[in-house]
Image 1 (tube, rainbow, N blue to C red):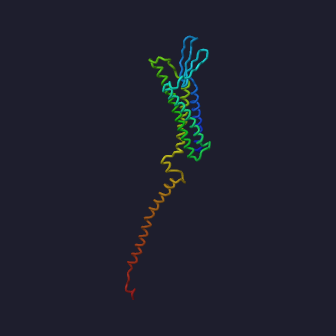
Image 2 (image 1 turned 180 degrees about the vertical axis):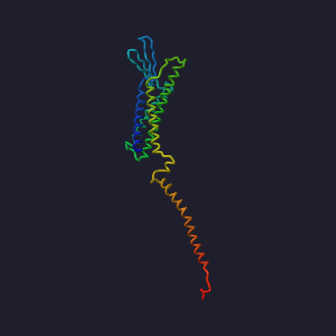
Image 3 (image 1 turned 90 degrees about the vertical axis):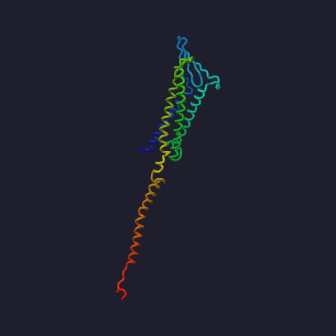
Amino acid sequence: MKYRTMVMYMEIGCFVSCLCGWILVCSTLPTPFWSYSENSGSVMTTADFFSNLWQDCVSDNTGASSCKGFPSLMALSGFLHVCRALTICAVITGFFGGVLTLIGMKCTKIGGSEIANARVTFAGGLTYMVSGFCGMITYSWWANKTRTEFVDPLFMDAKRELGAAIFIGWGGSILLILGGAVQTYFSGKEGLPSGSQKEHRRPGSYAWTRQTYMLPAAASRMSLGSPLLYEGRQSRTTRATTKTGRTYSRDNFV
C-alpha cells in the first residue's frame, strides 16, 4: 500500500472518530442528567433530582418530571458561566474542525496542492484537539465539584452523584483529542517539514540540486584545478629550461 493511500485512510478514520466525538459532546447539552440525587423515603415519597447547565429537574415515582430553568442569568455562579462557555466553545471549534478537515482531506480533492491540503488538515486537527480539551475541562471540573460536595461533611445541601452525561462527554472528548492528535501528526509531517527535510527533498527540488550538484561540482573543480594548473606551469618551465639550456659547438659556426 502506498504511503499516500495509507494517509488518506488514516484521515478518514480520524475524521469519523472526531465526528462521533463531536456528536457525543453536542448530545450532552440538552441532556439533564449531569448530576442527580435520590430521595428514597417511602414508596409514595420517592423522588429523583437531576440538573445540568441550564435547569433543575425533579421526577417522582409515577414517572412525571418537572424542570425549571435557572431564574436569573446574572445570579448564576462563575462556575456555571465558565462551564457553559467551555461547552459552547467545544461545539463551535468541533464544527470548524470538521469543515477544515473536509477541505484538506486527500479523498475530497477540494483544496489546492498536496502541501496546502496537508496544512489545512493540520489546522483541522488542532481545532479538533481544542474542542476535545474544552469538553474535557468542562466535564472534569463538573465531576470534581460534584465529588467534592459529596465527600464534604459540612455541605448541607442534597448530595448528588455523577450523571450519564458526564461519562458521555468524557468519551466524546477522548475521541476528539485522539483523532485530532493522530491527524495533526501525519498532516504535520507532510505539510510542515523540518529543516533537515527541507534540505533533503526529492530529486528535482532546489535544495536537493544545490547540495547534490553544486557542492560536489565545486569540489571537483577545486580538486581538478590544481593538477591542471601545476601541469601547465611544469610544461612552460620545461620549455623555458630546454630553450635556455641548449649548447652550441664550434662546428655550428663553421
